[in-house]
Image: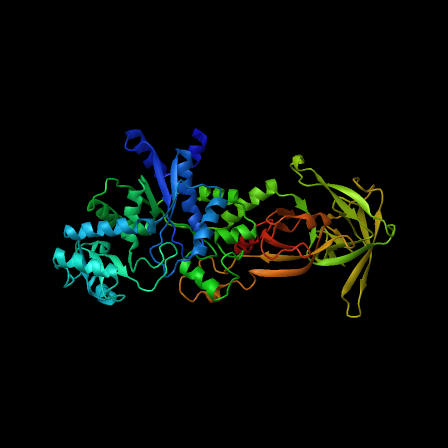
Amino acid sequence: MSDESKASTSNFIRQIIDDDLASGKHQRIRTRFPPEPNGYLHIGHAKSIVLNFGIAEDYPGTCNLRFDDTNPAKEEEEFVAAIEEDVQWLGYSWGELRFASNYFEQLYDYAVELIEVGKAFVCDLTPDEVREQRGTLTEPGRESPHRNRSVEENLDLFQRMRAGEFADGSRTLRARIDMASPNINLRDPTLYRIRHGLIHHQTGDAWCIYPMYDYTHPISDALEDITHSLCTLEFEDHRPLYDWVLDNISIDCHPRQIEFSRLNLEYTVMSKRKLTQLVQENCVAGWDDPRMPTIAGLRRRGYTPQSIRQFCELIGVTKSEGTVEMGVLENCIRSHLDAIAPRRMAVLEPLRLVITNYPEGRTEVLQADNHPKDASLGTRELMLTREVFIDRADFREQANKKYKRLVLGGEVRLRNAYVVRCDEAVKDADGNILELRCSYDPETLGQNPVGRKVRGVIHWVSATLGHKAEVRLYDRLFRSANPGRSDDFHSELNPDSLKVVHECVVEPVLNQAQVGERFQFEREGYFCLDNRDSTPERPVFNRIVSLRDSWGRVEAG
């Protein structure tokens, strides 16, 4: 990585790593990304992925993908596969693929070590009793009546817990630390709980006791020789427990935990519980619904991995909590697609326009640049026929001079084609416009008309050769910039987050579009061929983002 590139991504974590390397504390950096497979990854996880894998790439070093699979009641193989796909789609490769369950036997052995040195005990209190005795921020907790059991009794009970002799919730293994600690996480936290009847996606029914995250995580890090364990700020108060676990077992490696601020993004929720609720209550069409902030949803909508990585680098890594404007993410994809997306024409609300002086049966092949700023993308053929469709919003019978589209008696240029004049608007009995009758100036292909100025340029598609398509106009999922502050967030859902246009007409070349291919529909926005519902007979295009930030203008107004 160049010095210039390092400077652009510098942050306090990279400074710590630089200092550790300079001092000789570490010779090679090892990070990890440790998601729990209980749902799909979202844009907040992307920040952690870019940070951990980016550090491994730049120094260089390695980054493991490790699944924190200690709660089989909520975890599924589907989520494991989805997480692997997301990481790879973002452009990263892991050093090793690991599961916390790979270490279940070692975790059990280390728990036995803690019991043997009097640092852990089997407790018979119920979860409610444990919470009641934990104390508050201003009052110390009370010791469990089982805290002073003998080592021999604790070893026997723990072995019997593993053997399945006790019911769920009847016993736990707890660390023996300090019930008066000002840090509640150190007040004899639970290390193991009993969970019968669960089929783990990696270990099957081999275990009926499962270790807690705060116990599993530091040991997993140490077993993998992780040098820097990076996590979000909610784990800052858990760091003393992270260190306590490693200080009290026979393990050599002691990674350094460093916390950074999580990503909060406007107009969405980042709680996996609430995202699960949206899916289960059919508020959205699955985890990959293009309105979801999941990586799968963003991918289906048409976001590029480059734009998401750029977004994560742009917002930076700090210890200060804050909320990022949705416009920052949207501008990243706009910027990327503006540079790479071929231009195409699509008419979302077709209005038939008949060029009355154009020869019947004639098809004229015109040439158009695929990109106005990148000649390397080449050209494409446009098929002009006597009848074309224009967008209904591009015509008014009367309008002031600020209206730069077609009016009755006025002229506009059809994009990459001729200048046309509207001579007549044909209406039905109710006054609805059925079609426009226009005439064209055959001297205006690539030339401005002599002695007159046209109002503007509008897009069009051949009425006879264009292809019908479905267009899905996606918008922000919530109306509120900060939704989900309570469990009842349904009232904050945006009823206009999806509008489906069934009778869109697109230029013929779009019939050859490939799944996931992205385009700018001229004057409409950026679109992507849907990766699930699109068929050759009926293509479906998802709007990735509009050409401009309409929400910003609404809020400013």
